[in-house]
Image 1: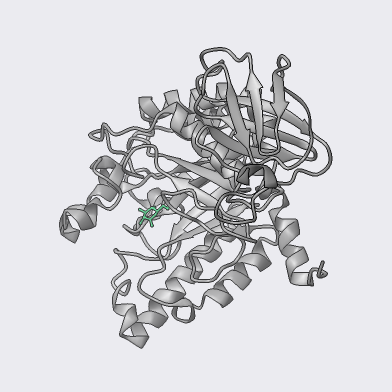
Image 2: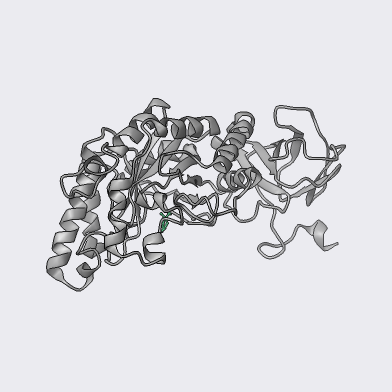
Length: 413
Ligand code: GLC
């Protein structure tokens, strides 16, 4: 294997905790929460500036609400949180010298980012700050594309806000940029920006949305592993990132556990979103989901956090579940239960033993292509997902699928 460069070594060091973090809570909170119809409402419904900006003065969040979020995140098994410090609407939840359009100087009257960070640290979780580069409020926010003077002003404004965020709150663990429209990396001066960030926060991990790859990829709304690189899927729990009490379309706790299985099997993380009400209350459906996921994670956490996919992803999957791997232990995460007999394909090693995770032994038979489990209960023991622990001889290897590699002789008979 090729030796890692100094830069790669540095990145590996920074990413060490993040690779095992697996699960984070995403929070979208801003002026739009008062309208309750998606965080893009200003654009979707074409709100005139005159009508939208007064929302800065009518926003009065309850003090202490961030504590409830952080407690729930901790109970759910999250290891980090990421909160919007400024979404596309341009309203800063932090204290800034650059504009009056910020929480301490308007309705909230407090630094909501400071409160959030304190609450997250209290729970021993890592702190992530989301920051939208695109800005609908700043007069140069769109003009910057065609007007160099406007770009200069706007980019200075953005760099200064990021500098404030990276300076005024102690250690920040994740910088989560969003939407680099309308400039390219050169226009944003992203390389210079991120160099400054790393100087101020040497251990920080930075996502890929300043138009530079940086430390991790951010597939959105879908779980697609990225090859040879750390990645984190960000997912909504209904159809909006911001508070939307009119949306009945909630994912279930089973869906959430399924997302966790999938990211774990692909060696990535899940950043699962909740949109608090303007007061800071979390939606009932979301609290239920994170609570139930937490109960499930209490039992199965080690098969999710510590087991990484040692085999290139893509093959070891099935309709009934996903594999995670820890040394010579394979965990098969059943998401759908086949009944009293189960067939698991893809294991090339000799299987030594099979049992329920933290539970009873399971009878098995291994053929050249299949592992057949028998004597199973009719129904899935844990409805959110049941994990079976499979000890194999040596480092887990996979057999092929029909389309990728030559078939084991037994298949063609
Ligand atoms: C997007 C959306 C946004 C949301 C984000 C989360 O790009 O513009 O509203 O904050 O994705 O990943």
